[in-house]
Length: 246
Length: 253
Image 1 (cartoon, one colour):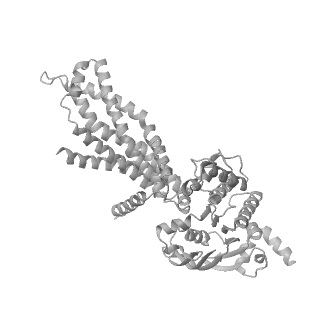
Image 2 (cartoon, one colour):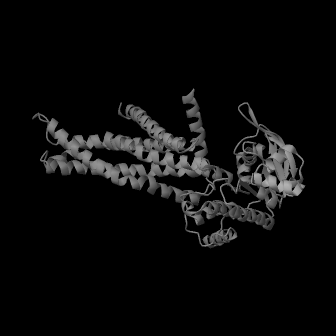
Image 3 (cartoon, rainbow over the protein chains, first blue to last red):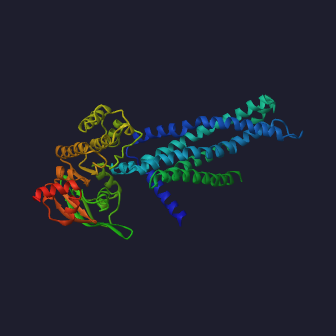
């Protein structure tokens, strides 16, 4: 029953979020603000993680491919496939669910408990639309760019680490990352990213919006936002993979 | 003018507001008074639509608010200014941005016009020059005044104030009370103030509704309240030792 209650309330909230904005120009400013707040500010952590993960996958692959039957360009190929298909769209989004999710839930939750959301409602503003729509659109718009940067840095990190540790040569790595490339995999990856961006922002906003109580409850909402966003990312990752790759 | 007719509200099986009727007159400071937990904040929240009424009518100049559609409710709400007990200022915005917010959302004013209006409102509440401060940098009294400036920014027809004096020293309370009354008279607003500050009741209570255990118990004005013989109201008004002494002095005891 609890699941159906939350599902019903979530969809009612989403309906309110996507109702006509009071003033488009104000919403546009908010979207740009959210792109900066929840997107651009995540760039450093994404860059560091992607670079080093690319490096680690390169070294691990080179370490594992000891058979003379496996060509050395397989290292670059493995790094590219890992980065494009799973690490960047899924693992980076899981990391972002922690950062963005807690940020969104605590921001909206704090506004709820200090009556700022009531103040918006009494002014005649659709508080759900004003607070949540820019976050969803901001997230959905900026995350594909962040993930594209993550993919580039991951593959670049693999190159730097691979060449520096002599795990593979520069030529083999570059040949590997170009080998058997199928562009539709990018379509699959970015479909996942857009879906996950929507899940992270909307679920976190939902938990923040329905916070009741005080500071302790804001903390609980943040935790719930991260946990449920992560679980749903994993479920949708499975569903989308099943849909695209079978 | 706002009229409430036989409104009731229960939370679970607890009846919080029981058949309350009252007329809040335009151009007057209308006060709802009562002990903590008597249901006065609930009445205000029912009036602005933050809670739904179980029965009754809430008429904003003849329009029955609870039966209006979402869009019509939003139109009525655009005419409402509200001062929350805690201020409810947007804490990530400066004072200027807070006051400008309703203008940004609902008017097509130019930036210069908006800034004129912001400065006018801040001057009205004696916060001129504090434009760039954040709510976190303001004292309790300044927060209330800032919230009042935001409430009047879009020239509301109805002004709701939820315990505007709570947590303030008597001198600052008087400043806030006078501000509310002056704004009410100057702009001919229907003002509703919730309070249990007896100074406010006597000073600015032009139309007072006393709520006792969720029921309308007494109506009158701030001057009449001192002459009341209603035992529950007497208990409420003269609850403090100081007020008891005043009462005894007036009665010649």
